[in-house]
Length: 94
Image (cartoon, rainbow, N blue to C red; front, top):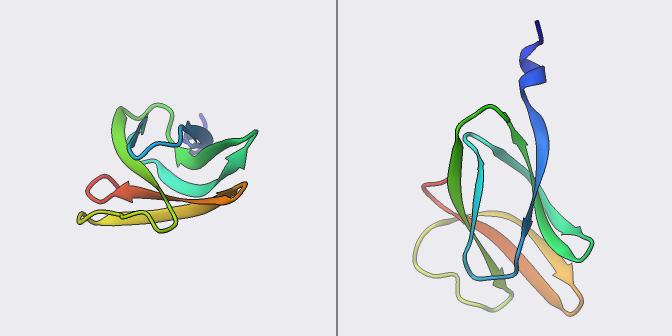
């Protein structure tokens, strides 16, 4: 029988550069890191692959772009050429 550590793994979730970025991931996923890989913005999270999937609402904003009135959790920033993108998750889904 496996240990509780065997139930978790790290998954990568690539983003399209867009204002709204809903991502389906296993429930309870914990975001670890945001960076670029192969030219795409990616988020890495610890997940339990057997957990029921849930839709989490992320958004990407460029420096100087409005964030909006709702609350957000910041997960990281990445630089792509002359642009710096900031990845947030709408609160209530973190």
